[in-house]
Length: 503
Image (cartoon, rainbow, N blue to C red; front, side):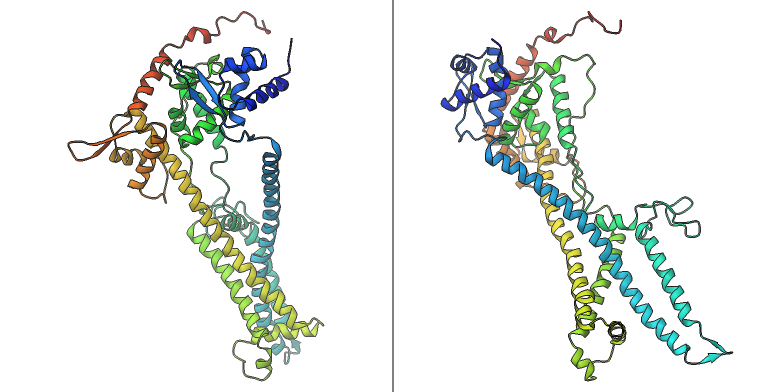
């Protein structure tokens, strides 16, 4: 009788729900009448989905128990709602991020240009007006035309600066032959990103430096398995992934589901995980880097000089916004003649709007006051919040990288572990600049986390150092080596090619 895999899995889960205290593969087969090979194939999937706890009996048999509430990690309302919420938030985040980028392009550069042009217009149109009051040689002064030409050239220059200039580094390409940019061919090298990309880098950062980490991690684990007869222990998995023991115990079951693994027990009761299917390979073993670590997040790819320049531009917008808001809130004092100093630009804009039938006070208050001030605060607020999040993420990455090195040191010589050994080990974690110094709190945490799996004995040596001995871990390591040595490699030999479709 042939059964569907989905139906088989539901049958197995139903049996596990009724006997959550612990079942062996043989128990599951007896309760469900499923083929033994199907149970062996499906039980890692159930153990992963419902957070099974593995126990080893005195005879060396593995029991699967479910002490929790037997809640699925991947199905049901909670899991579906969580997945939907995550996707919805991601989509909304992308939308608002794109919209905010457009707003930044308009606000940061647009308002900066607007304020500069208003200032220039106020100055040059005043000069043109005063020059046109008299005639020289029967001709009207060309000050107005010169002002218009100057403003046009300024607008063109700022446009090129926004989309092509590097702000202290270089452009991706020159705007024209007449305006070569630094960093282009023949120029001085440097950061060749356009200005607007540097603005986005300052506000939003440059993305996750470890977005492909899951693939990198899986390749590391699979490479380790193929190099070690398809057998791995939980401490070794924790060393490769940098996870604490509790998380590693959950995630290794996911690896069993994805890559055909199966937990087993050695003669002395040590739980190991076998991945025989990964050994059936046609190609020779390729070198896989086993000590890769995650990269730390960076605030921005910009230089300090670039970020300082962006801060200055935003500060200018904030200053102009405060200027206009101050005078519009003190209109009565201005009309009474009590505030005169520095009001030239405000008077010019006020008169210009009134001349064109636009209410000056509300327009200046909102457009030239509140909006640029609010944007300027947001322009600094988002990076400030992002900086705090980056600090937390880097702290987690630092701990993960150090955990790899610390666990590896304990596994290497489990009977002689000192805090000094661990500090020396984690110094090679490749964390980069900005990482916190290695301290006793880090080494103590690593020892405690491994102690959850194997309780150590502590004693002082002749030099007065506290030495930890993970006796259980040492015994497990020896049992693992014996088990690996007993793996029959001939079962995983492909043998000679007996058929070739191209022959």
